[in-house]
Image (cartoon, rainbow, N blue to C red; front, side, top):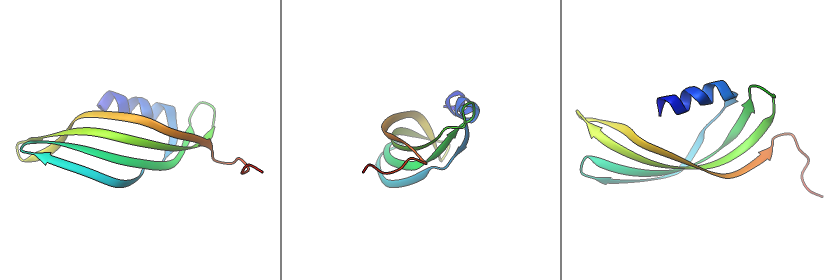
Length: 88
């Protein structure tokens, strides 16, 4: 997960994660989470500005009384230009 986000820091000069509709299911010291994300992103290399809609499917584990990510999956739901005109 650290390597994934380190790569994101190189790929994107800006991003804003607007997290919504969390569904968290706890089962003892393990849990799953579903999150939907909508936000603006800017690519570092090209300067392209996009809207992304994503779904995170997470797995968590409780270690020493603290919840930690054990697995993170991202599903791309939609990408659109941030500065495009709406369809006619």
